[in-house]
Length: 147
Image (cartoon, rainbow, N blue to C red; front, top):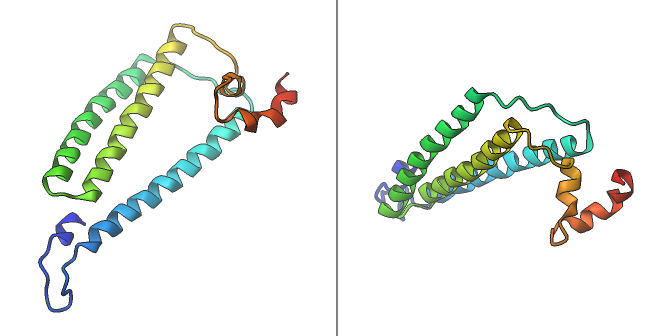
């Protein structure tokens, strides 16, 4: 969509095609919101339901680490291109890639922890136990269920 957005003005588009890039960034934002909603639904389903068995295989950890390295290269390239061509869509794509890197780091840390036998409280208790947690008020109604 960015190549379309940099076209010069013409008879039918007197002010150019710059809004196409804004529409691309908006579309990407909607896709991210939908993805976040699906992830949140699955997270709540797993917090409330039965515990999930995690198999921390070495190939899975290597795959996550390799994906992180690939995403670092992609994010850096997208950030450079976004700055070079003053593109909000490319900058948003770079930000998305960096978010992927941080979430993958959390997954990798969890897999390493499970691999070394680190076991903690249930996810619901860990989520609700921090006194400074912004989500703590949401946990009060369910406190009777986990006690």
